[in-house]
Length: 94
Image (cartoon, rainbow, N blue to C red; front, side, top):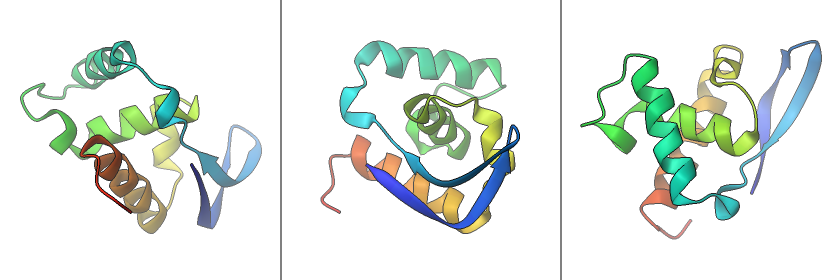
């Protein structure tokens, strides 16, 4: 799934206008690895997919980017990406 950013960002010397969330290709291992990333950043595993930071970790993994990319992504775009992650995990129609 591609998401066109309302506000393109500069990250690692590159302008990013859209991100691709390859969620359909991910596995349970990716989910477990994401939880490990989230906990390493100080997250509480009890909150899991309810956490903004967990969703950012999962989105970053799906985008094949480090999670700190979200420091550059604007608030509206970051929220749109997080909502796509939540909808996907809950298997909600979009």
